[in-house]
Image (cartoon, rainbow over all chains, first blue to last red; front, side, top):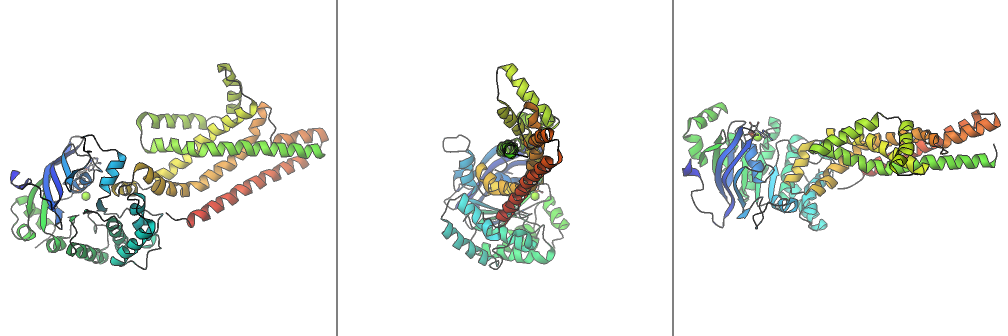
Length: 263
Length: 213
Ligand SMILES: Nc1ncnc2c1ncn2[C@@H]1O[C@H](COP(=O)(O)OP(=O)(O)O)[C@@H](O)[C@H]1O
Ligand SMILES: [Mg+2]
């Protein structure tokens, strides 16, 4: 396992450093000593069977779950602990979290806000940026995801694919240093998956740093710079997409690829 | 009915409205506070909120107001009847409003609250901009309904000698031997008060529909 645990020291391009993260719920050991780095502009697909801890890992990265052990560093700043070593308070944690964008499987849009307000909420209320400026940017971001004509609608009036594109626009509006996607297309009708993947492909090409949990194997292969494969709380493969898909080294990965019918 | 009879109606209406109004102003935020204690599953406090609501809910308005008015002086707290009425109605309104807020909170989808957390919103911002607008919207009908119940429970204040609308009507009827006209007048005043509350509900609901973030 050591061979894939932070082999090199962090560089100035290391956006995210995950070191020795462990997390249990009761006696269910969900994450066991997870370590990996992400360089600026890297796209990592996090794969693994359901229940292996992918969501929990993403939630540890932005401290929605507090890990039992290990460090998370975002551009060399430690998550969850202030400089003095004391635990971060609500305000400090909020500032750290606002530097990480997250996209959820079930969208989790705020239903009482219009599309535009959803996108503006965090920049205005968390980053305290100028409202007018935020609005212009929000309109631009929504245009980028193809929703310029839906800005004043409530999320409930949108299709799943449109909702998820709002979810992505909402994350982008914070200008995050890294984007986390937790199965962004799993709740969508097959017909609508393409439009969301298209937006994500565009982001990847644009140099965004992204961690993507997905079951879209073809997409993962095309868009990722690296594949991390997890099984029962461990990272057991961490390699290029070609290596992983064409020559999986572990039986678990072979079984997994077989089960998702990746040929 | 003479001039003084009408005056006593005005007086009765003022105490009915006054007691109800104070109970509403106190009961809405306190009820919300209790409901949030339960929603956030704060160990001991959540349980206390539950006990408070269960006990108060089972106490009739007349009983509670007498308990407060005659009971508190035993502990050296002497009250004038109007203050006793305010306290008693506020206690009840808090308990019932707690249940109204709580059912809105139960219907609230926690995942978008967590999304707000992931987007860096502090506890206060999440409450103010994500939770409150949504539960306020879904609580308005219940809260207004509870206000009309408060108004209609207000005759209870007459048991400690206060003059409310119904008591005024009853006194006039007893003197003139014509109970029906003053009762009808009292009824009309209740109708006006409740209509005003329903109008308030409509306005709040329209305002919400056109509100921004
Ligand atoms: N809040 C929680 N409390 C208890 N158990 C949890 C919680 N969150 C996740 N788990 C458990 O952790 C394991 C991994 O879950 P998860 O990270 O959601 O897996 P994945 O996203 O890979 O499907 C599962 O066994 C799940 O039941
Ligand atoms: Mg998951």
